[in-house]
Length: 223
Ligand SMILES: [Fe+2]
Image (cartoon, rainbow, N blue to C red):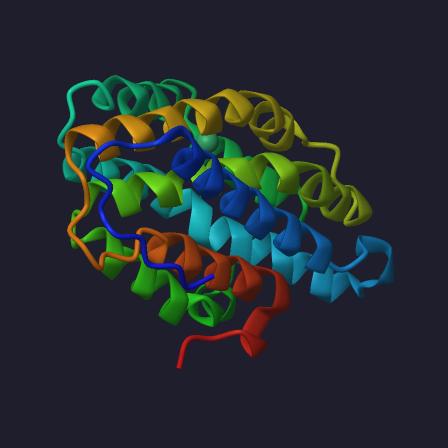
């Protein structure tokens, strides 16, 4: 996906729908590309869980916080705060760590470094503090997580784990989070249209690459 959208003065319904369709198609693509957990070796399954944990545990709250800082519209702020509230109140990082440990997949330095370049690219993108592209990337990520929870639970189960709180919680709550974040994207676009030439999908593309890196390991690294 490499679409660059000119800034609309008025956000038309069809424009919003086309954005959601692109995001849905990207998520579908990523889910279709997932390997069958049964066909993987135990080490390949461990690697996917470990790289996922290496990215998510220490970064999701950071990404959501950066997006909060980037967003200007007061209407979109409560949506992000609600996400952050859930993450902190229920300690999703602790939940993530328990999930990885129970699957004997706590990330090693090798796992963390396998995703380092693509993770760094995402951090630097969010550091630009661009409201609409940041919000869109978070809406995409919440949508993808929800679809990824069943395969992730299957990977962990095949590694002998029965600790499924993380996947159970995120398979449900992130549906609503994703819908709310899309609402935030459109609110922000109406109030603060992006500059002409801005690629509003920049963060979505970076996250797609990072997700492929998580799934495939070393083979999918930024140049
Ligand atoms: Fe979470």
